Amino acid sequence: MVNSPTFQLQRNAFGRLEFIDAHGQRHEAVVPVRAFPIAAPGQGIALVSPAGHELAWLQHLDALPPAQRQLIEEELAARDFMPEIQRISRVSRHTTPSTWTVTTNRGETTLLLKAEEDIRRLNQHTLLIADSHGLHFLIRDLQQLDRTSRRLLDHFL
Image 1: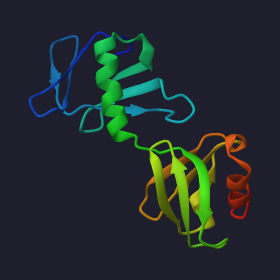
Image 2 (image 1 turned 90 degrees about the vertical axis):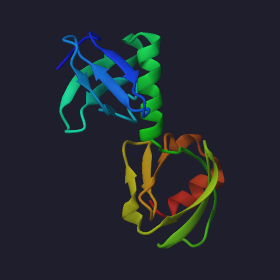
Image 3 (image 1 turned 120 degrees about the vertical axis):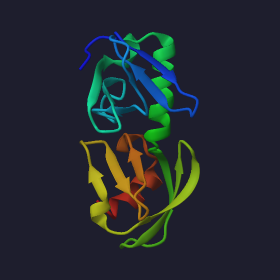
């Protein structure tokens, strides 16, 4: 395990991330994994081999050289798709299952909420909502939602 950036990162011919350790050993198809993707997305990132072995631990993403940071950020963006709900426009009914029309940071979409248990409170102001397809939506701050969105959401909390 490496605690400092004494490694190299690059993409191979297939576009996969390669990790080259301080001894020159190559590891292909490396995956960055966030320890705290919501609370501290830029801190505590492990670089993991396809076999699940941790190759490096990065305390702070900002401490890396720009080229390495960009490669890791690209991989994380592809892996950690979690739209943030900014507004709840419509709910088909106030019991589950129900179809929600929401506006996210990625645009407008609909999601199917199977059960109230699919809404998980992460802290006082943050919710994680799983739709019927397993996609997770984040409400980062309940207080930032408009009155209509909060009123619709209150039926399920």
